[in-house]
Length: 198
Image: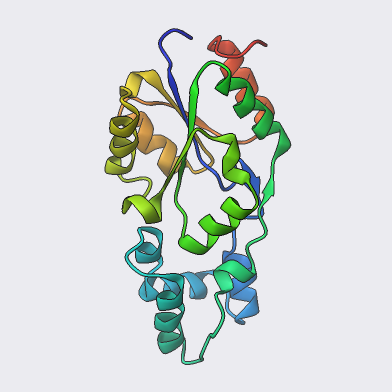
């Protein structure tokens, strides 16, 4: 099996880092529940900010108009406190001794910059960020973009994500996909594929 796999794609939030889910803290800060915040965020351009069509500043301008209250600061950046998961980092470092390992992440410019400044992306050979490539998971085109850029076939690729929709989308394309719950379970899976020593 190890001869066949050549590319590993890792999600960032929830897989490489904790502390990346902001819906609850931002909603609470604004006095909203999760559903209310998400409904407003979608109208303000939640998808557009993730594919780089609008900036965080434009998002909050739109949000303020819909919400009826001015939000002057980038709350996406303010509440974003990512923390590396050391066990995942060790697995990636181990894989990189023999394979190419890249990030495939749905993100926004302010989060990308924070990860960059904190050196979180240093563990990867390359980062494919949704706001830069104009595509996002679970779009088929997101995965095709990475495969083409890396000159890899679907069956030569292993994808790790903590979101079932993204895993299912990659799996439908013939990419071997793993739903991340812990680094320990991922390590067992990789050992069973003989890409890592058990």
